[in-house]
Picture 1 (cartoon, one colour):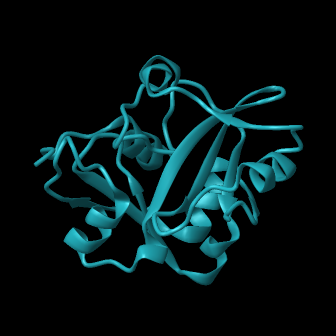
Picture 2 (cartoon, one colour):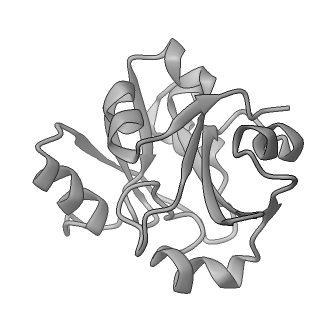
Length: 158
């Protein structure tokens, strides 16, 4: 288990006065699939969101979408008002965001990047996103995630 240490994402939510709960799960380094997280925590796929970092025309961008969906790079680029977006290499993730693969949260990155969340979020009350380390999810109101990350909501899945 990840332990109960406060992550940067939790500290940011605490300082913003946003309610959340922490859910811990066992993980396998070789299987960081979001479906496992949802199944372990007994949550529907549409309420567990993964975080993907990409590079657009004007710099880095963050996309959040259900673990059951795939990011459509053309739709993502259109929503981000970019000619194209491409996924960053996994080795760029930690120095850029402060997070590792399987523990990347849209909350509390080293720098604030433009964030885009799939429109599926409008169909659920609560969502779960990485708590900033593997084995930990933060569950919060979907509207709080959108508001806190100042995200643009739209269709980014294929």
